[in-house]
Image 1 (tube, rainbow, N blue to C red):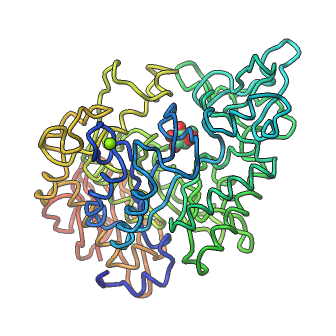
Image 2: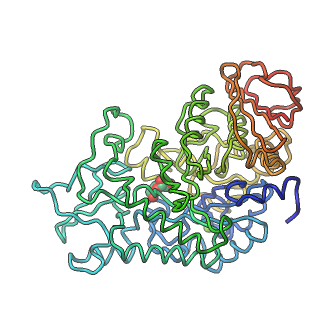
Image 3: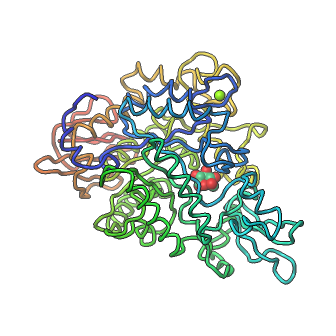
Amino acid sequence: MHGYPGMTERHEHPWWKSGTVYQVYPRSFQDSDGDGIGDLAGIERRLDHIARLGVDAIWLSPIFPSPMADFGYDVADYCAIHPMFGDLAAFDRLLAAAHARGLKLLLDFVPNHTSDQHPWFVASRSSRTDPKRNWYVWRDPAPDGGPPNNWISDFGGSAWEHDPASGQYYLHAFLRQQPDLNWRNPAVKTAMFDAMRFWFERGVDGFRIDVLWHIVKAADFPDNPANPYWRPGITERDRLIQQHSTDQPEAHAIAAEMRKLADGYGAKGQGRVLIGEIFLPNDRHARWFGTADRPQVHLPFNFQLIENAWEAATLREMIAAYEASLPPHGWPNWVIGSHDAPRIAARIGEAQARVAAMLLLTLRGTPTLYQGDELGIGKVDIPPDRVRDPQELRQPGIGIGRDRSRTPMPWDDTAQAGFSTAEPWLPLNPDWRTRNVAAQERDPASMLTLYRRLLALRRAHPALAVGDFRLLDAADGVLAYERCRGDAVLRVALNLTDAPKPLPFTGAVLLSTLDGARGDTLRANEGIICQ
Ligand code: GLC
Ligand code: MG
């Protein structure tokens, strides 16, 4: 790899602190075999896009054998590749090609549940006396024959599925095709840790761990309390507070053991990385860092930029509260899009999506980018006959469909946007003929160019990558802060409104989200970084 300004200082920190993560949704990145679905050889072919963007690591959503009831989050074999995506040889090639470009590669580990087609569950279901029975969560019916308690699946409906053959119910926090594993059974832990070892030994740089805070449930399965704020029209999941079905102390102990396993694969601080998917309020969220001498995950994903209104005062308060909640050994992180969340440009508009890019890449902490956001892909209407997301199919029309952020990457203006030679599994963004990688590469004012500049700046300025953070006073509607390291001070001002605002500081403009910044005022929808 070439050197760049600031390289030495930046590398005093482990890569997962100073670097950035790019999420690839494999079904929708690049198809190489003409089936309309992305695959590993396709990702390998497009690695240069990711490398040129200037990120440090790739996280791949699940690529394992799966009936695809939840598009890979229903795993039928943790130590193999779905034939649709390729095989282990294709994976090894991709890993080597990523490493050759200085990119780390993280996989998606799904510990809470397997597919109902996983051999473990097939055995578990076969009889009450099968040795694998206790690998999953089986309970007798309630006295009236109904489900054992009131728990609701995240995708709607009871979290319990009746199995007529054995007369018991099994638990599924998500689809009934995703039975929950029983992590109180040491045999489950052993088998799942072996799966982690399998990939670590193949050379993967870490895992994003799916719904980590779900993996253990209260031992006596009490009813969950009702959520007083629930009203019709929002997701059924939120009828109840998931007090007894998530965030149990035993899950923290398991996370600490996962960390020990990961740390065993590399020198301190430069080993393999664990990113936990965790949705919780700050105080409970921060506990997933563990303690300094018994750490848990390196990065508990922080989704608060997605969850909060796009409004300067709200974000300011949220950022301050999050920063204040971090333990001394805890490193922050930020996420603005994913395969589950709505597209940022659809939510706040393209002009503000540029400001959001600047925020994501200048806050203190590790940013995770989602594929396609670097092109500013916005609203994609999915015609009813093309809806694939099981969450949308189960609870239609309340705005929780996830297909809208899973549409294929538009690479150029040739047929199917260069994604495939066949009709893609989901429609393309409607403006793909102009909104694609090739077009934006040529355009100095494009979102892609802005992302590249922001990422280059982060690499060039350790103050941005690893510096301290302090909020600054600014006019209403403006979010301002500074990042400092040693003598270097960088200031950022983001105008979250569509009216001009005074710039809260002066200095040489390093980058603006708009053309031709002079550094004396903040134009409508403008973000500025000054030195
Ligand atoms: C996570 C994934 C989501 C999946 C769910 C169940 O939230 O991001 O896509 O449906 O877990 O595995
Ligand atoms: Mg394919």
